[in-house]
Amino acid sequence: MGRVIHFEIHVSDMERAKAFYGEVFGWEFQDWSDYAGMPYFGVVTGDDSEPGINGALMLRLSGEPDLSNGFHAYACTIGIDHYDETEEKILQNGGKVAKPKGALPGMAWQGYYVDTEGNIFGIHQPDENAK
Image 1 (cartoon, helix red, strand yellow):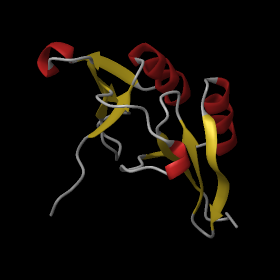
Image 2 (tube, one colour):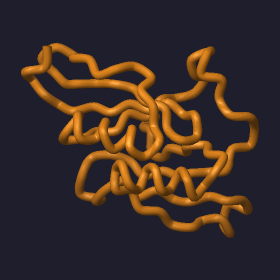
Image 3 (cartoon, one colour):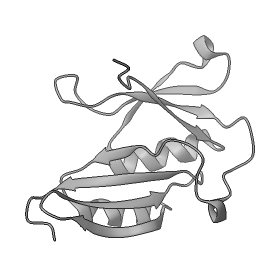
Image 4 (cartoon, rainbow, N blue to C red):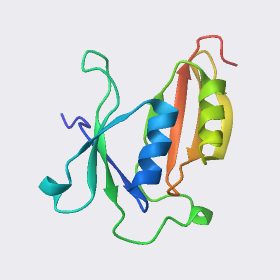
């Protein structure tokens, strides 16, 4: 079975992206640039005892995404505890709404956002009362 074990978010401004994801989600970063031969920072998204995966921020190798055409990549969705608080942090740190908060009835609240680098990502708050 092929399980996703790592993600990479392509960024144009590494420091801006680290500030965004660090402030919004509390992610920590490890400089793996020497290993990768380019600006590349490992992302620690949480404690190893919790479900989830770690990944990296890597320097974008092409132009920024054209959001008028949707996106042509995987969208990472990040599990959160407090939807409205997280959305506020996203917006305060330069992110934008791509698809507003909506209910996955009986399961969760879900929405999509654009980070400071033009990438789309989702946030997901479990809530069996969502409707």
